[in-house]
Length: 554
Image (cartoon, rainbow, N blue to C red; front, side):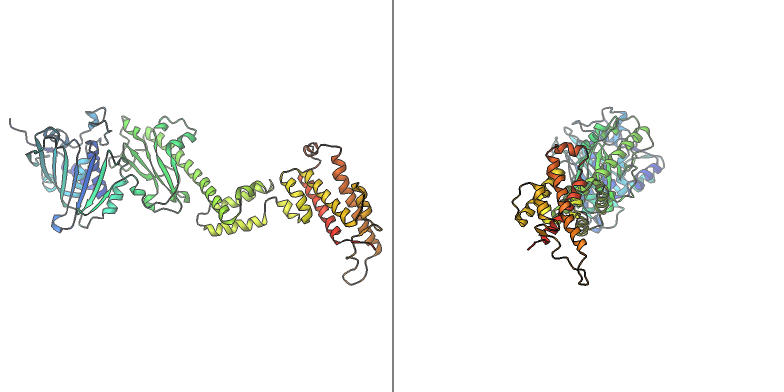
């Protein structure tokens, strides 16, 4: 039986537009060949770049996939624009792997990087493998629209041999290959690399080798925070139909990342579907200098409409299904931006607490309620400045802390150390009346001790200790004006009497009130507030100062 010749039918202008112009960049052209191997159920793909000999520059792509029979080469591969979904509704390969190719144009990527292509392919169980060569200049020179590649059938040594090897000669690229840059660029175009089921290696001159991984494109990133898309979906209140089909990760860095790494990449069935971006969220905000990641939306391939552009650089966002997805992705990005700001503040707060010794959270909890919003806004505005170094941030926080310490009003009263010591525990517990009462007792006992009075009743103690003819003279060291003349005797007596009556008032406002009423009732009724406590503690501080300066009358 005579075999029918292989033939490629085409419009030369189509080949030129979809081959050379669409896939002129090496990573994108290689991506189509790697994708073909993936669709052919390959578990291993090796991309070999050769540039050490000027007249032997070439690229070889070898895979262990299912390969093609002679008939499949003729009926499928050499038919440009053949849509696999028209003949395969399940769109899965021999192992159930979802097919990524749809338009039948990926094969034209070959001509984007090389003018002469040799393909050798075979299926397991067949005795022969097929090898054919296509030449770019010959294809364009074929005015009939039909091109006949040169080919031959080769007997196999091992009938189980399978896979495809593609060799590209006569390369359009004149410069040497950058292995690392090519590997990183290629890694951005896929999200299906797996060390068990899909291994892709890229080599240069059989000496250098890099394994492609999902993480390769992020290898230079110093990660700070990370979000799972599945977790974010649970936090967003939205009824988007396909929200639970979304997967992926978003990560942030401590410092602004390189421009080429910013943005969220969208993948569909393991392949790039939309280049990194932020799905309509304004990118002017500095937050997006720190954000990268990927989202998998495999369900996009299940719609009747083709939502992915031919060059796989973007989604056709003007279509209804894509527009609904974009609206939901917008909410995801907004959530990440808000949560990033929150996490950054918390991280900076924790770090500042460690470095400065200022417990930020405790500080905010113990400043006056009317001060707290302004203080928190001030610290938040500072922490929102990524350009502010940790050292400068810490310095500013410590200065503000000194100006507005915890228990601000308490500290600003500059209370006598004895009054502070007696009242502080109860004041911080918001037990304001008890704070005053304990301070009053401290004062009374100090008066009793210094005046050496045997009385036990509080009012009697202070009334005997103070007054114009009492045991203690509080003005003993302050009888003279700055010019050396004595103060008027009436002035001195008024001060002495004032010490007595103020002290008696403090006693009456303490023990005598508490003896008749419950402290909780006084507090809830508003008869004794925090301000009342601070006012009376200040009075006791004044009285204690006079007590310290007093002397016994002789």
